[in-house]
Each structure stands twice: as structure tokens, then as C-alpha cells.
Length: 282
Image 1: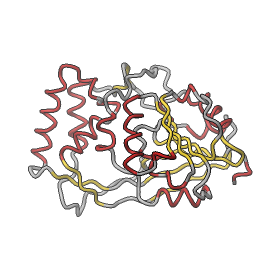
Image 2: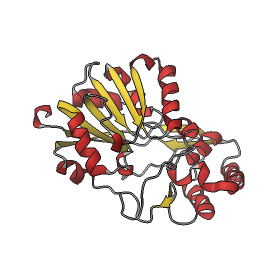
Image 3: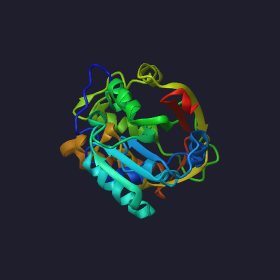
Image 4: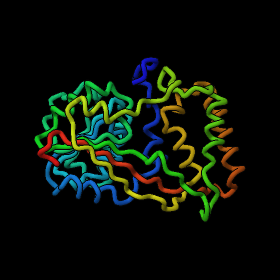
């Protein structure tokens, strides 16, 4: 993590109620790609580190005999439990409130460890070393995120596009120009050299896969608001006494862009990086 920022427990405070409703899904086909690449057969154990409200773990539950989600935020853990119950997989799910730095925490060994856009929030070197020790021989660590390098066209969408730049500018008016993160700020963003960190921890055989997106998604005004409040950089608590004013301004902006309250957005593609614990998994 950047030297000028330190994790604290308010990073995603208050965002759990908005996360499942507001965040865009991973691209369709992600589970099929992982099943093929990792040779999954419905057995084995998955640990999803920084699991949030269980989005990734619940979505992959059919590929494993057991799923374990780990997250330091109690609200996220509660949401994950509800998501598993709604999906009918609560019987094979376990949700643990802990930081990745607290592992292994007696959780045993796993076939696959996933990080869904979460690794950059952690003390990555020690976490990577711990995770390699928690994987069974032939196991894999998988980093999953939206594909950041693609341009998602707004041409041909049935509703106005979500006004992302205008929303970001509004957040900046209330919270300042430097990205907020918990009680601190991220003037230089989050680190992105995962490959070097994982190689130093002993992982090998890096493979990259892209699950294509591009589908038109319909978004309601409430879902767009939820997406804003689901972000660490615009978590509800950051606005303090100005939250009501911010939300009123946000709703006004969204009404001006789309009086119907409906928006369109392109499904992001999903980028998958697979590192193997040892060469027996290749």
C-alpha cells in the first residue's frame, strides 16, 4: 500500500447496504472461464478474501464444495450471509469477519483463493505469503476485476448514460479533489504491481483471461445513488453533516440527465489473473 496511507476500519463503513444494489456485476461467463482454467468439479474449497457482500463467492458457489468469505467489515459479512441464503447456498458457506492480515485464522487449506478487486487494500507482501501457505498443492490464487483499459461505448444505449464524470465532480466539490479512503486520502491511488508481489511470494505460471462484457445494462436512479455510496471514496460517513445536501444535489443531477429515472451502462469486461501455488497446477 502507498506509504502515505494506512488502512483503517472505516474504509467501507456504511457501504454494505448499497453495495449489492449499486455495484455492476462481473461479466457473464466468469464462472465458466474459472471452471475451465482451474479444472473445478464442484468439490474443493474456496476462500474469497475481502469478500464484501459475497458477490464473487456466492456467484462461484456451484463450483466448490465449500465457500469461505473473509472481510473486516461486519456490515459486509451480514450482507454476504443474506446473499448466500437468497441464492440457496448458505449450507455450504461460511463468513468470517477478519482482515486478510489476520489469516490463516484456523481456516484450513483451500483449492482456490480469490481477490475480487480487494488485494490493493491489503499489506500485500505478507498476505500473499500467507495465502500461498493456505493453498493446497496445485492450488491457485485468482485476482478478478473490471477491465480498466477498455472504452465502453455509450452509442446505441436505450437510456441516457450514467453521468460518471459529473458525479465524480460533485463528490469532489463535497470531499475535496484528493481521493478519500477511510480516515485518510490516496493522493497517488492504490498500487497495481500485483505480479511482482505474488512472484516474490513464490507464485508462478501467471495466466491472464478476459471475460467479455459490452451488454447494455439498465440502471435506475436509486441504483446509481447506491453505486456512489458503495464506493470507499464516497462512503456515506465521509460526508458527515453534509450528506443530505450531497444526496439532494446528486438526485438533482440525475433527474436533469434522465427525467425518467432510467440510465444505461455497458457491462464491463472482467479481467482474470491466475497465479499457481506451484507448477503442479499448471
